[in-house]
Image (cartoon, rainbow, N blue to C red; front, side):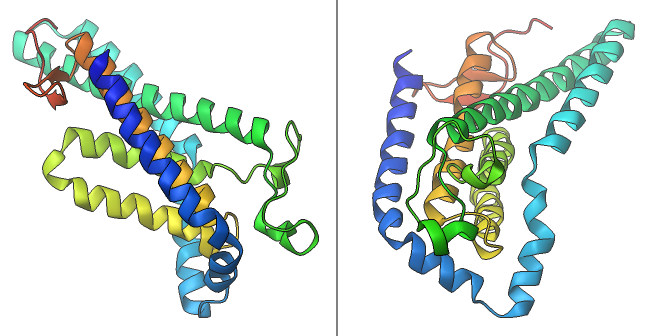
Length: 229
């Protein structure tokens, strides 16, 4: 468990530093983002809902079910291995996205931060734990968590393209500030929560020899540690 705990520690440290840096600037940055030119705001409104958990969970569940069926129906070795890989990929996506969704919605409920649309009456730092309305579910950002988990999965599977996936996740996160749904600290926490979930799930899969194996440095690398289907 040392490696997963170490990875958790670094992500937690990064999150803490970002939150301390961003929280005092939340009101200023939020107002500035919402005051950007209409064309920029319109573009962000079009892309922001990419970060919804729903379609990610449904799609990965469908692919997982199809992969299970194909794996059962396969009779030849090479096809069986491809079906097994597809099954493990879909399971990695589904478990990562599902876990991230459960975590972020639990934190939203426990913390109860008021959204930017309530800034005029409550300010940027109003907390109402256990509220049952979406208006008090600003921290962490759910869309940003979904984007962090989704692109975090791709970053773990395609390490050479990690900078691209991190930029894409950040783009979705920033859009949440521009459209007035979240403060910057909400987005930072959400992105890092999603990323943390994808990393931890990769460690779990490596432990069971699925999709990943632990490299010499103890980090999950793509590739099975054993040839079992």
